[in-house]
Amino acid sequence: MMLSEVLAWGLRPIYVTGDSWYSSKENLKFLKKQELGFMIGIAKNRQVSIVKGQYQSVESLEIEENGTIVYLKEFGEVKVFKKHFKNGMLRFYILFDQENKDLRETDKTLFTLLKTTHWIIECYHRALKQLCGINKFIVRKSEAILTHFFSSLRAFIKLELMRANELIDNWYQLQRELSIEVNRNFILEQINLKLSA
Image (cartoon, rainbow, N blue to C red):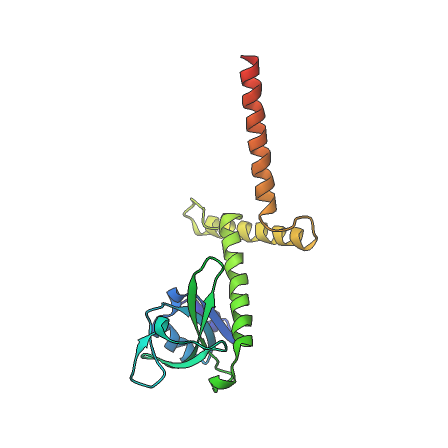
C-alpha cells in the first residue's frame, strides 16, 4: 500500500480519502490500526447493520442527511453518507473519524469538507493524465521514467501558475485553444487545396 510509504517518510495525515476501489476490509482495518480517519466510497452492496448482526446492503438503508451510524460488516462502527450527483448517480461513502470516536458528533460538515478535498485530488489526477501525459511514456529505464514524471509535474505546475495568475481560466483552456487553432488551420488548408485545384 502506497500509504505505508507515506507513513514511513514520517507524514501522518489526519484523514485519508479514496474511491470504493480502496475500501476492502483489509485496507480499512489498516487505516484504523494506523489511527487514521478516513472518508472512502463503498459499493452499494456492502453489508451494514444498524442493529449488530442484522445486515442489509447500504443501498437499502435509509440514510439521514447528517449521515447514519452503522456497523460495517467485519470492520466496526462507521458513519455512512450518500451523495446524489447531477447525472443521477448515487454514491455511498463511509466516514471513520479517529479524532472524534463518537460518530454522533460528526456531522455533514466534515463529510462535505473531505468530499470536496477528495474531488480536488481527483481533478488534479485527471489533469495530470489528460493534459500532462503522466501515464503516456514509452521508456523503460528508471531515470527516463523519473524524468518523464518530473516533466509532467512541472507542466502541471506551469498550468496552475498560469491559472493562478489569471492567464488562463482553467487547466483545459490551452488544450481547447490549441485544438481550435489546429482544426482552423486544417480546414483553411483544405479549402485552399480545393480552390487551387
